[in-house]
Image (tube, rainbow, N blue to C red; front, side):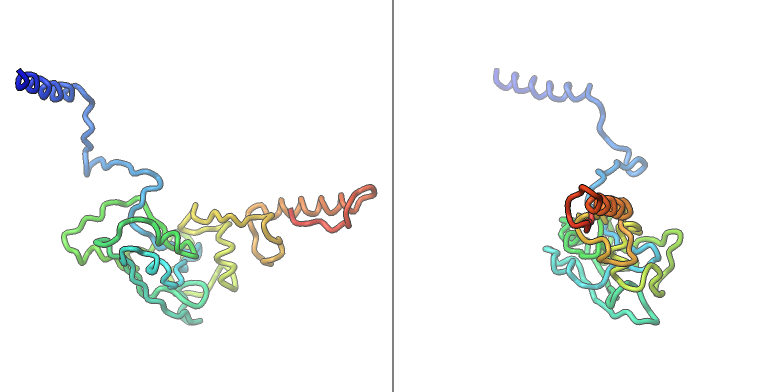
Length: 226
């Protein structure tokens, strides 16, 4: 009796699935859309003038728990400049046979050079092809960008590049939302560099200074940055 009951239960599971909506995807003709924050293939981003954001510091390689990243730093010269500052990554490799897509390398990057895309089609027939080189990882040149090496176009120092990236992030849009904004430092700390909302903050500061110096106002008349 128990065997017959078990048989009917088994058929019941089969029949119940016959009338459900089919969830099979038509891959690869209609690949599924990944989540916006899906951890996929890495990208080495560029500044708006085309210079590389990677400075060859190797912090991503040290942070990688799978030892999947290999970096060799090189020195920039006035004749050949690949990134702002003194150093750049002359060699950059990621072994996707080892990578576990944890994102710790992204957290370790001090210049927001390394980010992760939504690309997940990384299967290869050869293990050697799973070692992506710098040329494969670099973001493409957008309109207005120039292929390095070339002199700095956005400022005279690396500070102009990395602080000014709040206004013009280049190819890693959305990655430059720093907690440091107007009101958390002096507005004249970085002369010549504009920040989002800096003009409004300066206006609030001037207004506060005038109110403090007006008759009946309180304070010494020295307004603090908003």
